[in-house]
Image 1: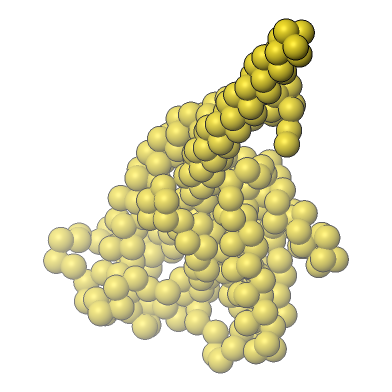
Image 2 (image 1 turned 180 degrees about the horizontal axis):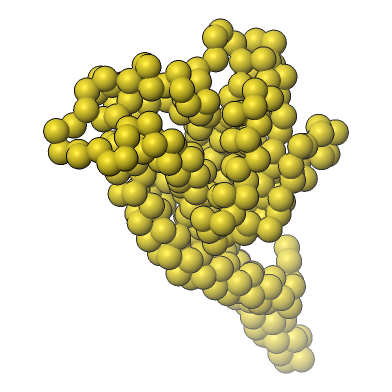
Length: 291
């Protein structure tokens, strides 16, 4: 059985750990609120762009814009852009995203498609480098506060390659933010642009007065739509990271509290046994002196 001094040392150590995890939980909660606000703010703009494209889309119009060009059959070459965090201590968040990126890549390669991997975030980049998988792009500077500029820098080269025919498809692997405790890894195809609300295709909304022409409007909106899709993937993953970290740190704090309670109970039993033994030794010695 452990000695009281050892138990006190362990209790103090776990208490120190609990302070750290509790602090990290509070920091993650604060960051989660701001990240969640960015997710909510990005959605109305994305929906507005999707509505305009759906209203203006026609098959004839699609033939004139490379970003709407749908591949015939299986794409020959695709880019898979996966997003992970730069830091750990967020449970299975990063490992789930890495599994989704590997699954998407394996599915494409099984169909004969050549895949270029683009990595964002230290955790995912480190894993694929460890497995000796070459990365076309590896960026660790986005962090947990992505901006529209980050999204533009990431997606503009891919749009140019797609327009010139060097790529047939572009996929993004990210954490879809449903709630702080629900951030499933998701694969989204951002190129070619799949017309939203296909049922509306071909019918123009009576609420629109087109000036200039539909061609110019669609040509201007399509790059915005793709950049916004990339931005949403970044902010949703950032929010999902903070939600996962808050949950992980809360679980760690609760586990530390349970461990402290258990150690204190053990300490009290050991201390009680030690006191009882000391009393018995004193009584025994006193009786021996009397005899």
